[in-house]
Image (cartoon, rainbow, N blue to C red; front, top):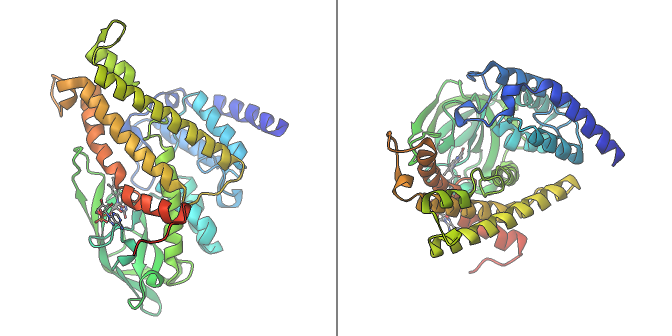
Length: 396
Ligand SMILES: Cc1cc2nc3c(=O)[nH]c(=O)nc-3n(C[C@H](O)[C@H](O)[C@H](O)COP(=O)(O)OP(=O)(O)OC[C@H]3O[C@@H](n4cnc5c(N)ncnc54)[C@H](O)[C@@H]3O)c2cc1C
């Protein structure tokens, strides 16, 4: 415990000296640092901040230092997170590499693969995307058809993926492919390749919220070096499932369930609906907002508890599906209530008649519809809970 307090003092002093003042302000979405070859730094402090954090390995605090990570214990990483939060520091790097790929590389990759990829992820040099879903394989992911043939000195990949978030900005992809067409789960492999490889094409898809965060991704005779398959051919399904657990944990912890919700729902309602006898004028809305705030409070306590358990060494497991399910539901209800409280002002898409916060509310409500789909749909997560957490049998 004394060691942890010493670490806290050191971390606090280091952050005080190294976190630029402009990196201690709320981060607009367009300034999020995803890293990669194409990263443009609107604010030069963002580059300085990333470089300083990466040099200490603190973009991936618990990864071993031999792969560029911070080498911190989970408890120390928890303290670092608290100190970062207390000065309002921006996330130096947002990265699928850190949230999803790195943890499974640490568990499944060869030494050569770890040394090749992990330090670049820590430094934000390579931006990754996730090639899982296909037009005919989303919830039934193991039905994927993208072929990966052994051509002796290389793999040859043909097929397509869909909903590949940020594929058009990514440098590399972690991709599920089929190396054996005679088996379902046992025919799947996990490969890594460069998105600039000849034969890779991406086409952005426009989302209901007006943004275009993901793509259709096509592979035509893409040659991939033999040493870029992770683990054993045909054993990629275990890696794929493990990665999904990390993905769900990160989606839930990112706060879209209200764990770190921005403006208070109560304040918004008070502003737009007004008060009568000291309470919100609309009794029905008042009771629904109160219920939502209670659920959000309970959810944030649950997230805090699981963070404490993680610090104490608890593993990431299928129970992450419970939190992912709840986070999606809470965020959808929250953003809907917000729009409802704003009345017609909550229905603006653009134009001078609407404040930026109102337009953002409309878009957040529309964007939240995807929360119960991304990272596995809510129904699929409930199936995971039924089978793998509660141990219920398949209904025949
Ligand atoms: C914002 C966003 C970002 C995404 N990013 C990526 C990405 O980067 N990479 C990637 O590979 N994919 C990504 N996806 C895709 C996502 O993983 C899939 O959309 C999801 O797995 C569902 O697959 P599907 O769209 O094919 O729907 P389907 O699987 O066709 O499902 C349709 C409906 O049927 C239900 N259903 C299906 N099977 C069952 C069952 N067994 N029991 C009960 N109900 C069932 C589903 O819950 C759903 O309501 C993203 C999706 C979104 C919304």
